[in-house]
Image 1 (cartoon, rainbow, N blue to C red):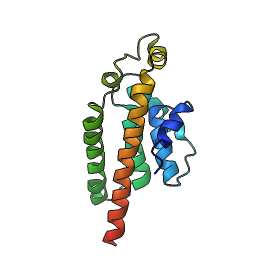
Image 2 (image 1 turned 45 degrees about the vertical axis):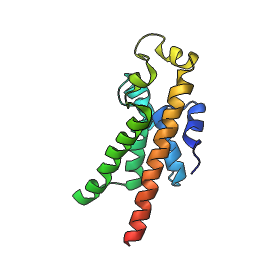
Image 3 (image 1 turned 120 degrees about the horizontal axis):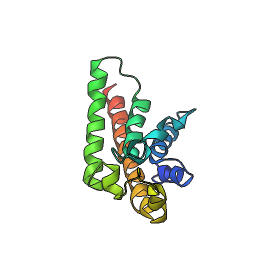
Length: 151
């Protein structure tokens, strides 16, 4: 696993959510024809400062890799991954809310500029992207391994 893969996407202008989703899809060889489907989740969903975009990208990646739940058993195996992802992310980053992570209200005029110019994006968002990517990849790889061992 290339631990900087997600943050390299972010350095190219992708949102936090897009970056994690693209990195996981690339790791799994899944063609992302429309990676910008995740764009609106950046900045805590439309810059509202809610659930961290890196986390939403990771949650979307779980769905992308695990596929549609064909039955309740599939959902019961996948949903705990999302729950544990959030728990681990919050343990490492102290919160999963964008506004609490950055300390900036992105809905206010100049909020995005402040985020970028202050260096908070580099100090907070890049580590959040790398953390979400690393955690989701650990879970997905462990899940893949458990699936192989069960066969």
